[in-house]
Image 1 (cartoon, helix red, strand yellow):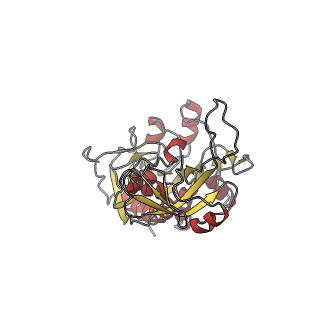
Image 2: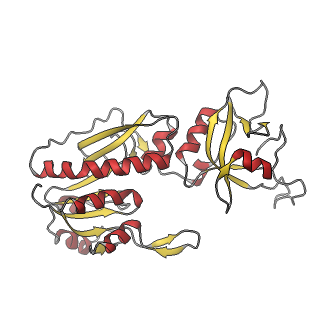
Image 3: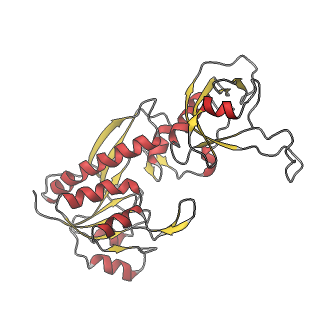
Length: 327
């Protein structure tokens, strides 16, 4: 193998784990792991260390969880590590210039898009929402901008009409892990020329909100189908069911909200008759719903607190008459 590199690893969620494991398994010296502080997680909202912290501790690697890297003491502690490089994967903190400049080879980011497309926080979901035919991994030398640094290596993968965010997440996580070790070693050997990113084609993958998950039936079926894949399997796109007829009015005296239903899989299902209101249940046996353009057949759904199930099974337990209009 190439000369052993002295590294720090900076990451937080599951997506970062394959890269951390690849660096350790390749024999490089990961002297310290930086990750977000423990936070509430799961149904019980118990404070838990991040997946990266749990992995690092299991491997006996020192873990640091600063809330910020902006103060001089934190920056000096990082510089004192005398690193060859820091590898950054979905860390979640902004790296100030002194941090970026401290390692000999700089800070190297594993980013889940084909830069300059989808810079920012949610590249996997945004690629699916936009109907992109491909995504990939970019290994980038970080600078002070938001995912604007020169690219050292990239690899591409197809997004099909069946690809959901969970599948793309796992594919890209493994691709990043396979790409990072040879890229680092070539960089250390002076065998790579960083490629500046063009501004043409740059897009921003804005952070997602709860509202982004809502299925608004006036939108075209093709957009709703992409939205469902972009949020599957977690946290899931959401629709509302009609409230029971005997439900109490809401605080404003209006129609109360019905049950929230997660929609995990759907497919486009032809056109609705002209004048059909969006949200109309067209076929009560297979959960086909009219949209603003075309129909959408719901295939896999999940009620609150229940396991996912096929939509037809759901309808056997919760009948919806043909012609019902979903909120």
